[in-house]
Length: 226
Image 1 (cartoon, rainbow, N blue to C red):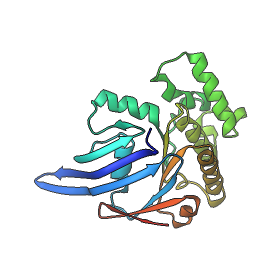
Image 2 (image 1 turned 135 degrees about the vertical axis):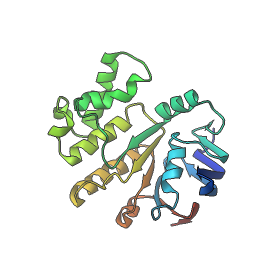
Image 3 (image 1 turned 45 degrees about the vertical axis):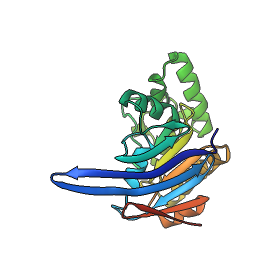
C-alpha cells in the first residue's frame, strides 16, 4: 500500500476555447501523504481550482497520471469516476451548498443514498456526525434556521458521511466572521489529527498556519514552501 493518498505525475490540463488552447495545469507533479494537511494557495487563474477539480474526480487530466487512494482516475470510465468520488472524496464549499428543503440530518445523509444501505442506517450515521460537529439538537432544522457557522458544520458532517480518504475544503471560512472561521478551522484540524487528509484551497494567508504543508500555484505550476 502506497504512503501517498494523492500521487500526481506530469499532470497537464488544457482547455480549448474556440481556436485557442489554454494550459491550466503544466506538468504538475505532486505527492500528498495520508494524514497531511495541505494548504493550496495562489492568485485567481493560477490553476488551484483546476487541480482541485481533478483531485476531486470532477474533471479529467489532458495528460499525466493521477492516482487517488490507490486508484488511477486517469483511465477509469465516467461511472467509475463518479463512484470513486462518492467513496473517497468529501467536499466542503464556501457557500455551504446545503439543500434548503432538507433538514440538517437529511442533508448529512444525502451522499450516503448513492452508496446504498437502509434509510435507518443512513439516519443513524448522520445523527452520529451531528454529534461530532456539536449540533445534535439541530437535526430537524433546515438551513435557513441555522447560522453560517452552523451551516458549515453541517457541510463538514456531510463531507464525512461516506468516511472519505480526502476532504477538499474550498475557501471554507470565506462566508464566515473571523471567530466562526477559527472554530471551523479548529474542527478541520481535529479531523486531521484523527487521520483525515485535508486539502484546503484559500486566498487567506492567515489560514496557512493550520496546514503542515503549503503549496503555492502560479500559471499552472506548483512550488512548495514550508
